[in-house]
Every structure is written in C-alpha cells, then in structure tokens.
Image (tube, rainbow, N blue to C red):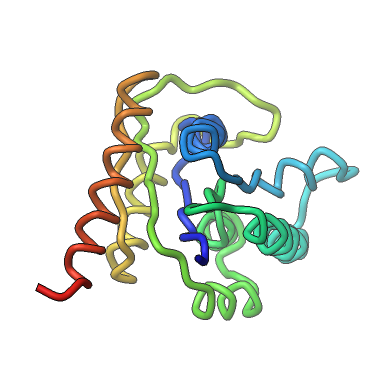
Length: 181
C-alpha cells in the first residue's frame, strides 16, 4: 500500500516539526524534516533566492527517500508551498522549477498550523509579527488550489488530539465516500 502524504505547514514557530514527530510516533511511520533548516545551518552568509531551489530539491529528495519506509502515512514537515510563499514574499517571484513541482506533485492532505501557540525565537526565523499574515496566505493558497486541509489549533495535548482527529475524519470520510454504497 502506498503511504498517504500529509503536509504540515504554517507560519514560523507554530510547532510543525514537533507535530510531525508526534504523528510519526502515533502512527508508527516516517516523517520528513524541514530540509531548509539543514541547508541554512551549513550555509555561509545570507541565503539568496537561488538557494530556495536547492532547498526545494533537498526537501523533495528527503521526501522520496522516506516514503519508501513509511507505513500508512508519510508526514512532511513543510513542502514547496512554504518555499513558494516565502520566495514570493521575500523576492517577489518563485523559480519556475519550484512552480512546476508544485503543480506536478500530489499530496493527500494538509494540516495548517494555527498561530495560537507562543512565538519561540530561533536564528532562522524572520517575522514574528507576520504570523497572522502568513497564516492567511497559507489558507488562501490551500483554498485557491482546492487542496484538502484542516486547521490545527490548541495547546500541547489539545493540538495533538486536534491533528489526529483531523486525519481520522478526513481519511474516514474520504474512504467512506469512495466505497460502494
């Protein structure tokens, strides 16, 4: 059985990595870390727009490696939507290769992390005052592209319950709708 790909996305400091780790443990499967963190930790100097394509390539490579070991689900801590939104915000455009990959790659479900948890400072985070703005940008992107998603809210245990409930509801309804009556 092919693992369903679920993307966890949202503004900075909304607990995406922690949520992916929790979901991987809960469903006893794999998760894909955010390649940008790995890349930027090793980069000398400020990143440039060209670096975003390298980050996108690395993210997809890690995803393709992990899916071979995933069970029912593969949880992706971000995907190219985040890179596109970031590139458009910072540089006013997105590399055409990234746009092509966004069009051609398919994911089964998206979990959009709400901004209801406190900001945690991190050297790679840039916009603590724009979380609401970026939440709306992500939400609009998902809606404008008719992508299936749920908003994940709550603190600690509430958030973890919310995300598992969203996954179970989405895939139970989807499976019920696709089976013969």
